[in-house]
Image 1 (tube, rainbow, N blue to C red):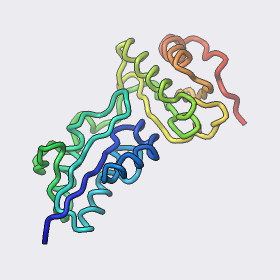
Image 2 (cartoon, rainbow, N blue to C red):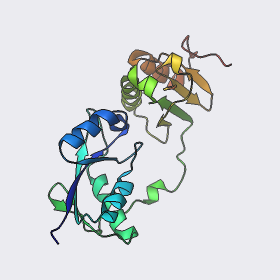
Image 3 (cartoon, rainbow, N blue to C red):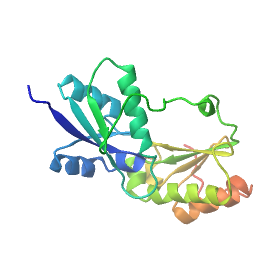
Amino acid sequence: MAPVSAIVHVGMSVREANQRDVLHRRAEAAGASLAFLQHGEPSLVAELDRLADAGVDSIRLEPVVVGGRSPARSWLRRVAGHWLRAGDRRATILVGDSEVTGREAGLTSPAWQEVPSHTRHLLVCRGPRCQAQGADATAAAVDDALGDLGLGDDDVLVTQTGCLFPCNNAPVLVVHPDDTWFGRVDADEARRIVVDHVVGGQDPGDHVLPRR
Ligand code: FES
C-alpha cells in the first residue's frame, strides 16, 4: 500500500488560536489540517493521534505565526518527540525537512518544578471580544513594559486567558493579588498600569471596573 502523508499547520501562540477561522481556511487551501501548540483546538498531540489513527504514515508540521513573538520552533519538535515516546501510535514526523526522532528534549525541566516567586499576577484577556478590540496590542504593551523594566516571571507573572466576563469593557486586564480589574486597556493604558501602578505603586487610576 502506498504511504499516506499529511501536512499540519500548527498555530504557535494565542495569536494564532484567535485567528482560527482564517488559519483554517488557509490550511484547507494548502491541503493541510490545523492544530495548535497552545490555547486552540485541536491540540497538536490530538491531531497527531487523529492522523495516526487514520493510517497516515508521514506527517509534516509547519509552524504558523501571525506576527509578533511566538514560541521557538523547537517546541514543535519537543512536543512531537514527546508524542512519539509516549504513545503506541507510529508515524514519521517532519518539522520542515528534519525528522523528529523521539530523542528531543522532554517537556520537563528543573526550572519548571516550582511556582514562580512572583508578587503580582496579571491576567490579560484574549477572549473574542477583547481580541477584536485590541487585546493583542494590550498584551504586547504589558510584555514590553515589563521587559523594559527588567522584570520577568519571577517578579510579575503574565497569563493570557479566555473570556473573563466583563466583555463590554474590552480589552480587560486583571491584577492579582489586588483583585483589581481594569477595562478599556489600550497599549498606552497597559503601559501606565504596569509602570505606574503595578511597579510604581501609584493609584490604579480611572480604568478600574466596578464590582457587581
Ligand atoms: S472577551 Fe475579554 S472579558 Fe470577555
